[in-house]
Image (cartoon, rainbow, N blue to C red):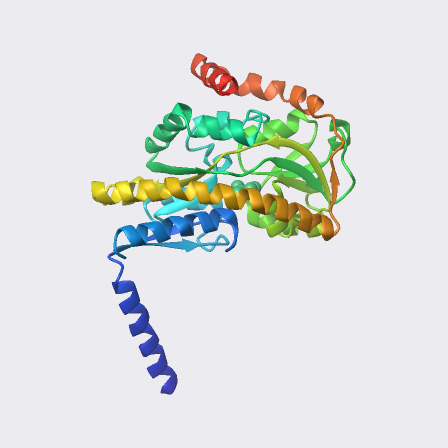
Length: 323
Ligand code: GTR
């Protein structure tokens, strides 16, 4: 009986807290609390809460609580989930232009990527999301991705031959592995740790913060810093949710999302360094002495396959020419 009373009291309390929020938006992220993307959306939530006097609350569900990335993107399209923070790589099947934005070695540096995403090209890409019932709110940093494996220190493309690597579930990354002579195993992020551990795959590829926070560094200690991908990350809102908001609230949300990108990018830079140091201290071997030019040249077939239409060629050219 006492248990019941306490439960009812707890329910009443949470109901009255929730009552302060007229609108509660659920936001999904695959990463855990403390990760820069999660903290970025929390900063956005805080600004939105302040500017709406607590009327609009954004609740961040971390650690894939609402599902794996691709599933949560679909649910966001349908308005089952209100917001999602995900890599462009997971949007490839839904928003075709993100395939081009996921091409290996397309971005030269973080500064180059910011110049592209924060300029007219970023606006253009944002509009493409809207056609798929998603409102692009902010571009976050995801650093550069490199290969890691449990077997041996990979120093060259030849070393990759025949090895099995998990990639995100999209065609560009499968073709990228083909171009390198390795085998791609597309699978959700949440399955990678056990797949490496049980030997289903030899390794995967990601940035230092993910390699660290996912625990992959524990099971795949050889990290080859080839930096083959720099994929933008996105905070998107469901168009279904967006259309229910007043123009004033939409404006507040847009601004808060933009401001949160600044927060996320600072946290990202710190986390990249911290994670690199942490995995090395824990025994990861980072292989830095590699011929990156060979990796870049090997990607030519991927560009040939995807950069075919005049529009695609023009976009890639404009990206490459952005200073
Ligand atoms: C991370 C990225 C996630 C997810 C993950 C993956 O770097 O932040 O959104 O895409 O990689 O490889 O699935």
